[in-house]
Image (cartoon, rainbow, N blue to C red; front, side, top):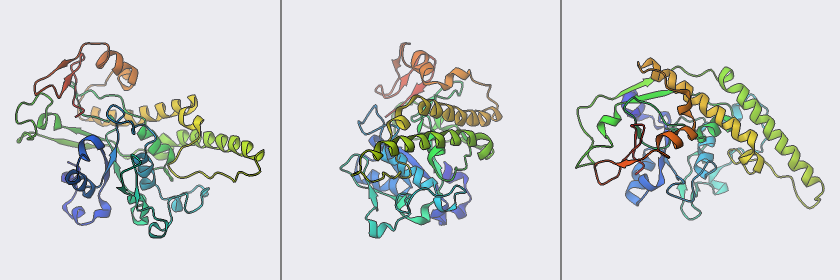
Length: 316
């Protein structure tokens, strides 16, 4: 769809095309699918419901952070050596691929300087979600990592897409794999989000958490003369407090809600009424949308699930 709304001239300039994320268990199941989606600038992600390799800190999120980044142009003084910032020569460093499972080898586009400061197109809901009133699921925290950890702060443009639920409805009957023709699809772009006004405060809080982690680490290394200084690496979070600490978790929640609010502005411009704010919280969806309330299988061999709030999801 994004390819369809861009000027045709963009098709002849691969550097202008977006990178996106696709579920490993859907888009990368065999060599043919892997080749197709890889050539379409899609990177594999694992979902915890389907793979033990999923989660907020999986390698593909690191890859996206490095694609978004261009540390050499940051206003902030570079704090990382060239190789830690992902600026090393890929041919001499042997970093042309990365692994998402420990055994696979995925092409690493961030290894090439020409791909720095790229465009990443993501669907923060993390799965197909169709609601009769066009309500959204909660957003997952990976989008917060992209905004907080990329260097410099990336531009964020919210997009509202309406119509695919008619093209590939979760209630569709046989043949399920065939898109329904003749349906209207609308892609609406919002305004570019002001980086400093919207994300500046969040990023300063993240920088403070990072500085605190460095000081803790420096203090622990002082007593160990045999330990060398441990450098940070762009897009890699190893400190436990930065990963799972309450302040870090709360910061990611706030950033994710801020992203969702920007998308809601575009949804409002499309003519839809405002949502209940609590729908942006994972706990609300778990208790009211797809957890406690009964769910029922819908037509089509049970591949879609219809929830108690009238919405539908199709994770596979």
